[in-house]
Image (tube, rainbow, N blue to C red; front, side, top):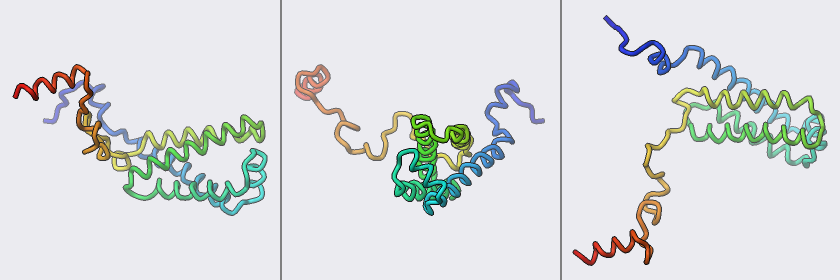
Length: 177
């Protein structure tokens, strides 16, 4: 017989809810669609998009750069594995949407866009928060040094400082042996 040993409230918090993958893919699909289509519109410098960006105070060449990063971000969110790349894509999407919100609010131009941008920001955060473990970057073990810190003086080794209590104690131990 298979009987749970923990109360239902505790046991259920460790299970993966069935709604989570659907919510993840819905949020991710919306973000990817907006990044992909919006990026293509930016790269082609559609007249309506160019006018909007010009009114916000940005040069039109900014669209090509922004559009390229949007399309690459959309692709990064869809490609399997590559968890660290996805982290960067989520950060980029968040910066794009929040930067656009600030641009609209400071210029007062096309304020009707702010609501849509806020929804896209929320969907980006939702997609990031609900992503399955296979799409997450691995976390280092507590107390583990990052790979870049190994062998780096000061990161993995104590550097003696003359006149410091720990350095003096180390010197005393060295001279005693």
